[in-house]
Length: 134
Length: 250
Image 1 (cartoon, rainbow over the protein chains, first blue to last red):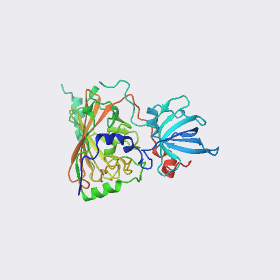
Image 2: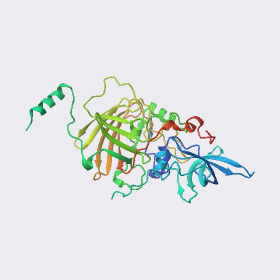
Image 3: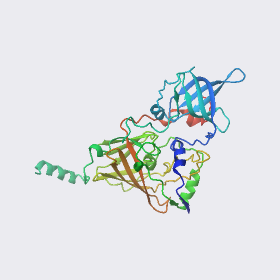
Image 4: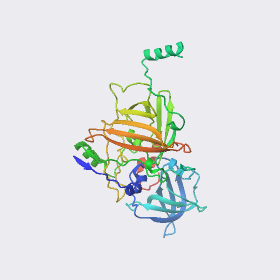
């Protein structure tokens, strides 16, 4: 038999809250590392279990490299201010992401700056109510 | 004055074997109907209505092995239902809608494809239960408290404190999973508190295949009728199911 004590501190619980109840582990992403990339939207895959954003990023050879970024569910994104039409192909964006540990060109989206300057996140806990309870 | 019709109605119900809850369901601010959002890790709710931490628990040998098995980054069964404990996890990521129907109560949790059905029509648990993801739930009112008894789960639901696997989320997350088995017995006492703003669920877990003794936790939701429970079809994007997270195009 083994004994587990109160093993999750409040801060640790807060840090992993989003991933702990997500669809899958986020172990494949390096959550301690961020990359910032600018490019052109190729596709916004508005579907569950996760929404994906694909961006063509200019490379050193004069071409582009496709990056894929994973976000939350469509419900989470809707509550965070997204619509399925928020990004369209050829929109210019700046993405901050936690990259895959494997080195493949993919990551967990942290923020995306839209062409109109708005900055959106990947979804998470629902926003506060319009009139928080006293 | 008791009318002849009322007496006949009561007699017919008794003949039909229909039991009646001792107390009527609460109404108004004490009503449990509507949309609720778990207070787990939300910044705003009253601190009196945040979930209690998981208590120190003692795992059986089977439970310890199962906990170790689940503490991996592997993520099988990603789109399967959550099981009753995870359904009632009070996460702030997804709302829970509680609806009255003819036979009792439906609890719809956004990311789970299967609604939780709590029968309050007086029935008992069946003598022989075929295991299901959410088990068999029966309930009755005791004053302002809905008492729900759940058995008959298949043991494949998510652990008490997270996803079915994929337990290693980051370098700082080494928390062991708290598994559940097909011997899970949940007794819940649900009531509205905080002047009608919060739903409290006191859950006593008895799963002697996994834990050496019962334990009790409290979960809370905030009333959030400004939110809608949105559609969630987990199998919609084959990319995640079939291609993993390699970043390749679908």
